[in-house]
Length: 477
Image 1 (cartoon, rainbow, N blue to C red):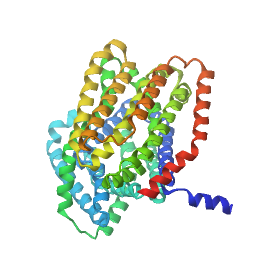
Image 2 (image 1 turned 90 degrees about the horizontal axis):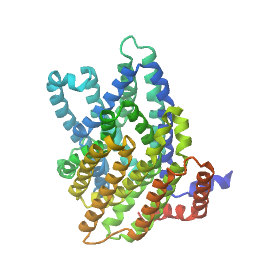
Image 3 (image 1 turned 90 degrees about the vertical axis):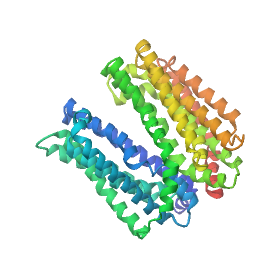
Image 4 (image 1 turned 135 degrees about the vertical axis):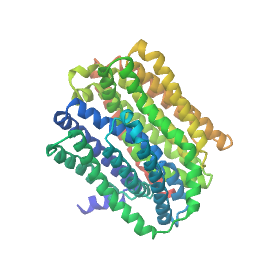
């Protein structure tokens, strides 16, 4: 037991942090999947639709009401002001709150005129603004924890919130005398707000109520060009389902949503690993020492590619678990969506460098062009080929975004590529070939299981290299 504890203690911090974030995401997604059939049975289809309407508006308005100050610009602040992170966090919280207050005044004034368009009760709009006011505190705190690779408190808070929110929502719904949709929304969000308030107080206490308006100027100049980027990202992730619903049917939208849920599993590891990769990339960009970034990023990309292969090969089984046999058709939309997610990782690699160099306009251009291209391609091909076409248009759009981001990175760095593009190109081609070819073998379980076994064997063979990658990230960051 002593030897085991010693080995655990000696695991690189980057590994611990990434594993912890991965576990948190898996638990959160697992609880989400478990609670969906519960609430779909307690709420009518109209009520469940109202919950999704609230969620959609909150995702969209959240960009305008918070300016996403806890995203890229916050990591830059962690890098640029290492000795003033408490003051920086508090200053960002105050700025975020001021933006939210301005948004609330505008939305409250406009509500009588847009009530029908929103489809939301006024009390839900008030709740939404309360979320925008307090949630950034948790986001700032968690972003700092990820940047500093402090995983214990982050893991505990993530899992606690993932458990607490649906439990409170279930209690609210079971005791609701009016709208069960509102009860579900208030249950989920009030429980979350209670957690957010704790971190709100923590940031205020640590920041000692010191506001530096220079940080505000820096953040606004950095993030203003990114607002179209964040809106385009939202559009890129949501337009498929809306267009499928209008051009094909609601059932087709359900098929595509299931396919998207299955494919998104491949992004869990990337979300966790990128949290450790960002500070490593920033530190080496600061030194203009780019080779170590590639040395770490290439194995990461290989791991993500392996995860994509596993998801592709297990798609029929995962769909069977998540849905009934009626959703079998959704399987054939999964391969292109997985391919698209793989190119989202490319955006992360190049985008990290662009964010560090504060060249946010390039990120914005890439995303806007990609989102517009996706809309055009969907408009052309969905009526012809049905909902499955949306998966291929998404793949094409994310590929376009990654190409633009890559050339933007080269331009910003004066022609420096940072990454081994021959390897990345070969790996990308391999993922696309496997993705597009997987549709041909879904009826042949033995072939798929053989590919899964081969992928796992390769992972075991190169496990030490993967662990050393995290050691390198920790040692040289």
